[in-house]
Image 1 (cartoon, helix red, strand yellow):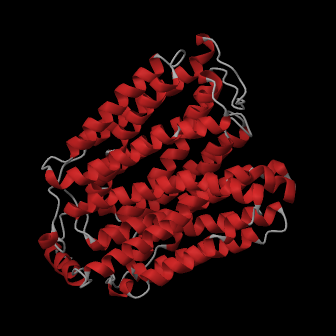
Image 2: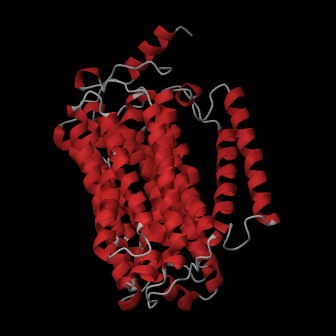
Length: 496
């Protein structure tokens, strides 16, 4: 079909919705509230795990309470983007919330560990959609030139979840009942649905007369699940070069190859080849993938470093992590506010990444004798620098596609962001084990000698190298002028 006809069709079906400012704010508040649900359930469970093990038994399956959620949340994220492009945002985000609440109900009523793990997997199947759809809906409502400032809201949502999750989880498990961790989701979820119900009806369906590639979806979920299982089990449950891990990696590679073949041959693939072939989408999602690999991986081992080298207790190390967290929120907020003021907005993130690289390099150099103040300053600056990338990558990717492909592009970005975090934890875990780090470091340990700090030197150094790769990917990303209100319905050229 002629490209002009395609563009006219896209413009006809993607006209800007006539939504008032109050309705827009209600929708954004509602989707961020639903996103908070999914983010909370990544952090709220950890403090309650010992209590759950005592109540339900089978403590050997405790890791699956976390893994089951992350597995399904990551695998399902790109599917929701495509489905919402075809059937509209409102029914799909409603479905995601209801699936999440069903998983919460199953988890709260779980009589044994198996049912709890199943409930958590169901939660993740809904939570993965909430991550992707929140950003997609904001993309529907706000033109790219103004969209970056909402990145601060998203970063703030994650900050609240990161701080409130462990606190609530600990209080519920210690003073009330562990099942409240899941019961609390029900009123919040129904409140979010009530807030977005009427105004969300006004959002148009972006891509009419399309269908979902069911076979492609199955292949993607299987390939992702096997890869995540290998990353979670490698080095902990099984050795990295064990037949189990190598078998999972090989099977995952086969299914990824089948998925790629399906993308090439399907009449309407799950992920549009136009989107995948877009240089902005490729570079933007790759930079986010690498950034999350460094950030999440380093944040997992930073508390271990604070306890075993700096000499903090478990609770003190948790408090000391606030510098990294608040720095990330501040960086995202600053970047979001500055993007509309800069023609070359990509430079904001590049300068931020350079700052983060320098600071994590300094941290690796002084890891064996750093004071708490030095660590706090450096980790805050690392968060501040890396945080600038989130709005730039998200807005660039969404600005590179038309509304008909907005859900797919955002879903791919969310998927690779989650996958990058899992890969980063596995990569830095392999580095830690390779240098003899005992991963069960106790908070009562005193300072160790510089030679014993070598695992952390290498962990921070590896994270720094990963940030350098993220910077290179960002530098290679083409920079496209951001569309404003008057250009919101204009479809860009996807192959650019």
